[in-house]
Each structure stands twice: as structure tokens, then as C-alpha cells.
Image (cartoon, rainbow, N blue to C red; front, side, top):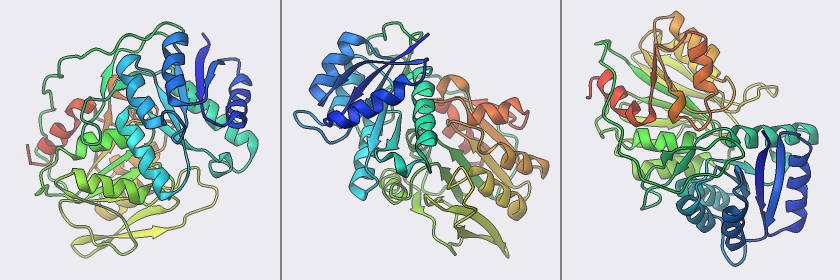
Length: 368
């Protein structure tokens, strides 16, 4: 069935441009457009879209406020368009906290090398969101994590926002294995997922942590700063030469590749530009592969929500040297792409709900 889309932007040119791109795909249909957040709320209630594309800066009501109102009244997957600036990054992260599921740069030339590639990427993102679950934020924003609510079938009316009981603690039984490194790879839905997991770690978490999140270079400093302010552990954007320390998470910088080298008893981070033909910068496969060489089987690697299959081959290399691989389960993913890739290949040994992921990691790491 057709995925219905509401396009929200104060620029009539941009609304028309996005609408033309959506209408090129027979699976997508723009059912309405809005010029500000107030109109967006009204249009969302009237047309019941399956996906909303949302600008951030608009008159009357900004996009972040609109996201929060829409998620409270008529939960709908929302894709934000953002400028690649420091302020744009902070605003986009605020929008994700408010309940938006994904984001793309507003200048399409920043996300692809040509018009055809940018068109296809935008269509893929919208289709992925239109077929997945909706997440509703829990007040207060910025320090909480969205909870999933039921997603209707494509083309049907979304349900009203309702509370659901917390999932029971069901972390896996620890294996008793010892580790020297935790590595987490993710993409679409990852910022919220990482926040939910990492904010539950104690300050004395015993392992260094590598975080690989598909994200533009303008966003990773702000994201690392936000996580550091919310978490008990330390979180920083990785820089070349960083020596891995327990209880510290190192976020791969956007536009670069993060690798690990062994330096005696510790590991050291190496940041490189990487090949120009790589689809992802940073790339989970590259970091996981380097971890397999530096730490062998002493790695606990986790693949969280995200489009595509990045992480599968790196996870395969880790598993071949004895590392433990886990994946987020389908029900709790925004997009079940990357976790599905490692699960379908028989690489992961556990599929774990996001609600239980932190507890499972802590127990497996000897901190439960």
C-alpha cells in the first residue's frame, strides 16, 4: 500500500522539491503540505500521514515544538531536515529527543554526489520509516528516551498516544566471559537508542567503549557533548591518538573512520579519512574489523537499529576470532536493517530488546 506523506517547510520551493521527489516513487504519496508547525499539527490530525518530513526553523511554530505536539496527539514517524551547522546539530538532537526518528541534511548535495543518488536516499529513508514502529517521547525531554507505541498498518489511522507498562527486566544470563572492549554500531534511530543504553551505565563501568553512529561531521561533536552531559560515564568525540580508558566512550567522528591499534596492554585510536568510495563515514565494519585484530575475542560487540547492513562483515571478523556479537531485536528497532543483517547471517548470538540491552551488557561485563 502507498505510504502517505506530510511535507512541512516554510519554503514553498522546498515543499515542492520534496513533494516532487516523493511522487516519483509509486509507493509514496504526498497527501498534504504545511508551512509551519501549527499547520503541521492540524494536517497530521486531518490526513493521518504515515510519515512527516519536518523543517526545524519555521514561523508561528518551530519544528521541534511541532514534533512534540504531534507525538503527544497523533504519533507519526518524523524525518527532520537540518542544516549542517553546530546550531543545526543541537536543534536536530532536540528534535530526536522530542520524538523524531531520523534526520537528513537540508542541502541534498551534502548527502549524495548526484541528484539521482540523493533522490533515492530520501525515498529509502521515508519508506523505511513508513513501515516501522512509532516512538512517543516521555516528559521531560532531553533527559528521557522515547517509548514505543503500536504502529498501524500502512494506510490506516495511527492510534492515540497511550502509555504502556514497562517491559519486565529480562536481561540474558551472563556467560562469565571476560572482555577488554565494548563496541556498539548503529545508524537510523541510534542517537536515542545509544542515549537509552549509555545513561544506565555506572561511572565505574570497567571497559572502554567504541561508538560508531552514522552521522555527519557537524553533528558528532554536539552528540558526544550531549551524551557526556547525560551519562555517568565519560563520552567524547574520538581524536587520533586517544588511549582507551575504562568507563569512557569514544564516538567516531563524522566523515572519518575510527580504527583501533593495540599499544601494549592498552588500545589506541587511529582516525583516518578512509577511502572516498566508502558508503559510510564512520563505518561500523571498519571499526569492528580493527577491533578484531587489536583485541581478538575479548570484545563484546553490539549492533543496534539502523538501515542497511553495515557491521555485518566486521562482526563476522570479530566472531571468527571468538568475540561475542549481539543484535537489537526487531520489535524495538526503528529500522531493523543492521541488526537483521548480523542475525540473518548467524553471526549474533542474542537478539535483545532495547529496554533490556543496558542491563544485559552490564551483567555480561560483570557490572550487573
